[in-house]
Image (cartoon, rainbow, N blue to C red; front, side, top):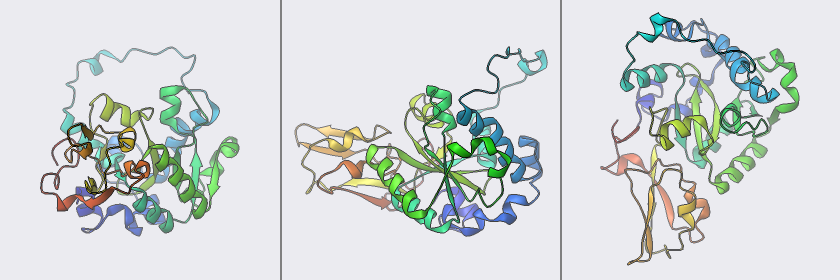
Length: 294
């Protein structure tokens, strides 16, 4: 299992542990490392800043810095040594990190939480300029009182019941959007997202092969060649380039070392030839969580 399961899930899936969604975690004083990195004392402060800087620009369709000149960083900043990729990843794991989830686990999360709020996606606003793409889902935020701090956003937010939330995620699954869950100062869970190349974190990590921002899923996909007809419908859904076609065999196969275990390819297969298996059952990928390493 991923390191978050060991550290924050007692050996079980960390995102299915109710303790990682609680009010106590939201309002507790942060660790010194978290304070130093984020400059806030509680996760509640972090949430409010996140809404102000990331969600509200997408709601209003205007960046906070629009029309303002960009200042060059002071000379002291320019001369600082740049952190290594390992150092950046370690910092992100402390603050804001994600993991890919298949639809089954998304629905388990939805069943656990008290409320689901659908909102405009800040990533899509930054990458495409579109402010109406509601691919982000906040978990439990309405009961925390955060929404009341942003009355101008009311028309762009939808508090959903569990049935409707599941319907929307199923629809995104069929469209080929991979699902992910994110922390807000780990291990507190911030929300669920639906990502493709227009998502900033996907674009920087997967498309541009940048610094990792999320773990692979606890699963990998596997094709049953007895059922596969080689129609290649599933290949159009894979966001990670893990599927390949054999013309000699007229079958599709999945490179398990590239598979992130999102499972969205299954929705496109008309023959139910694709299944999820636990990542730990495949020795080749049991400890592959970021690139091709732990």
